[in-house]
Amino acid sequence: MLCHTSQEQSQQSDTVQDEALLRYYAAEWDRYTTGANYINRSFTYLNHHWVKWERVEGRKGVYPVYTLALIQWKSNFFLHIQSKNGKLASAILRLIEHQWNGESIDQGLVKKVVDSFVSLGLDESDINKASLDVYKKHLATPFLEATEKYYQQESEAFLAESSVSDYLKKAEERLREEEGHRPENSSSANASTVLIRQHSELMWESFQNLLDFDKDEDLQRMYALLSQIPEGLELSRKKFEEHVKKAGLTAVSKLVGEASEGADGLDPKAYVDALLEVHCKNSETVTQSFRGEAGFVASLDKACRESVNRNAATRPSTTKSPELLAKHADMLLRKNNKMVEEEDLEGALNRVMILFKYVEDKDVFQTFYTTKLSK
Image (cartoon, rainbow, N blue to C red; front, side, top):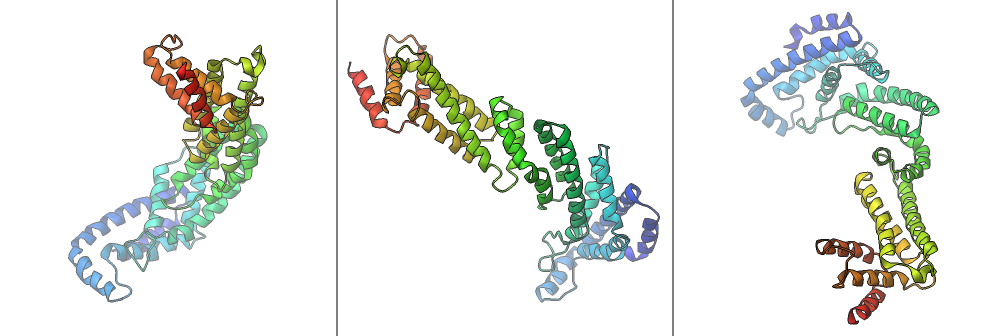
């Protein structure tokens, strides 16, 4: 089918460039693959029986009709265009560069042409299996080189004039754009390397500031970016653990300082509420900003365990934390308790259990609580 038109197509493709070439190529691709599909269906019996049997017997060069049509397209038209200094791939890159520079482009056109590169891949061992060999050879390599060079220059220039928060948005936008230019199962390693890894130190340095000022959206972006590189979250988890630990210790120290008798004069409810407030706030951060990632959950638990068992109130006595927790639970359960309404009691007790989980010496809690219960 292509033999009758390939010369005319090749001549026409020689006269157009850039977006005009892409539009011509895409239109011819649509026309050709539509016709190939019709013919392929007409030879369904041949494909399912003779072709299949010949391939089982190890005969090389025998393909279903549609696959054979794609091979012909590649040999007679695709490679002709690409032989002109990678003309088709270069046209795609130049159009994408327009988008990088803020211009609006036809994303559907880019996707259609890129998808054709993928469709032309052929795995001889399994012709039904998708192959990225044509895409990698003719487009991925030059695209990644151009992307790396452009992102390197742009990211350095952008950071010289903008904040890290603004850069997070820019990097997120660039990666989203690049995702639309790549076929499924292909890698974005180069873009991640330039946009994230090369600036990860700056991100880590800004992480504490984002935590201190509750910049939840920026934390979400930073998490999403750093999670794309190996060990990108490790330092963030450690910083988060220290942040939660410090918040818990500071909250207790403030209460101890305000109490007339120091640790001995602490109000059990105030003590529990202060630690719960730290846990609740940072638990929301883990859920919303870090998507409940197991490493950040572990960091939260470790920090809370430290702040519950080793704080300003526990220095005189290591039993202080379970003692205050037991006193608070006892007050909640007393009949004359007016701290909470009856319908809120279950919720209040559940909140106590959040801290109880972190108490290391649970036997002390039981001892204090049993003593209170017997009175």
